[in-house]
Image 1 (cartoon, rainbow, N blue to C red):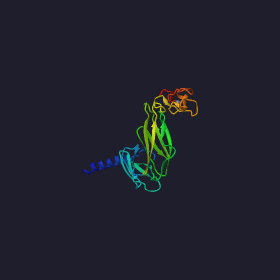
Image 2 (image 1 turned 60 degrees about the horizontal axis):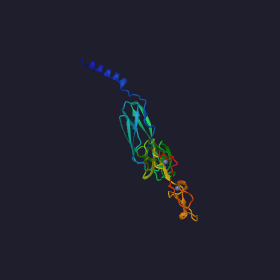
Image 3 (image 1 turned 90 degrees about the horizontal axis):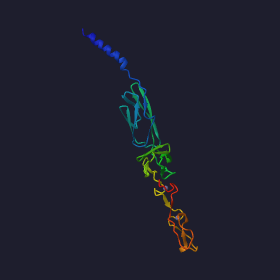
Image 4 (image 1 turned 180 degrees about the horizontal axis):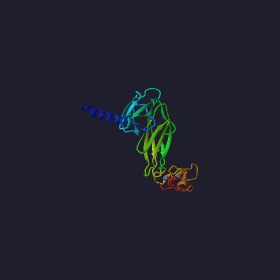
Length: 256
Ligand SMILES: [Zn+2]
Ligand SMILES: [Zn+2]
């Protein structure tokens, strides 16, 4: 009789299945609480934490193509050509547990304006500045090295780290909304004084660098006298010209 051992093995398999074949429960979390994506054909990814890595997509809207590998969900959206944002969720199932991640795709903008500023200047200490953006659609912000830019609800937020070098760092933030783009130049001052560019001197504000002031009608040489603000003599038969330069008021002549 060979049936008994086979039956026994079957029983064993069934018994172990009762404990290990049941889908496992996981305490799932995701790297973002919501996926917010621009209007175009965009790609993004979300990491699902807390599972054993065997996850599948159980729901996704038809405008999103999803793939999942090693707990990383990659999404690709179809362009949103409508006049409104569209919102849905992606449901990821790992074992007996599921996690719902809302997804929100913006719509194509017909207007994109940076109204309040033409450029952003930061001190060498760096920092964060906010800029109002006038738009009716979704906006993506890109920035050159050393500049962080993000767009949230009508606001562009630009953050730069301190500049420890002598020279200023210049960069750009680019906003893209549908077919519209806008660029915002960004400068982070360096150790060198931004007013005098390190020379310690600026052009004399009184004589604009000429070293003299016009004095029509006065009994002076050639109808002018030396500029008193940059070392010239105000009166006298002979002109003593000024140097045309003044000590920089920002760095007091130090250049840094
Ligand atoms: Zn002067
Ligand atoms: Zn200066």
